Image (tube, rainbow, N blue to C red; front, side, top):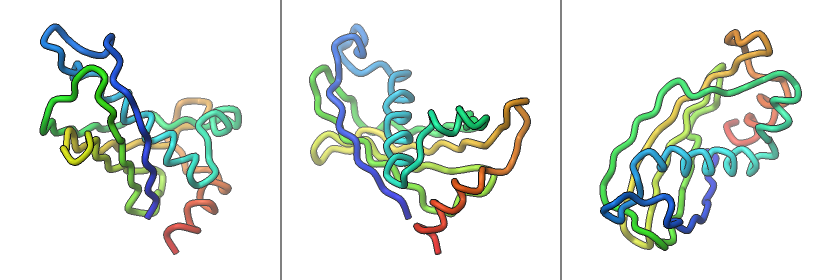
Length: 133
């Protein structure tokens, strides 16, 4: 299993009229977690894109448990629980201290430069196997 933890401070511009984090901003927080999780295993979106691979989001599931507010310090806990194949599933918790704010899951899949679904690059599989063998 892969796990990363990312810290964020809610900016004023991320809140709505009621003072809550606008629901659409949570997708950006999840992206921070994904990028950090890949960095944890020595991978980066930038290098994969340079080599002609991309990982678009196929599915997002999200459950809101509590509201986050301006200036809250949030922790995005990101986990990859299964060995990726042509897709990779990330599970998330967003927390403010001991309060659970959001649980979520995203599924991403590999595409090549022609925007066709493909297998992940060999180096990606090799790095992931270290965590799932």
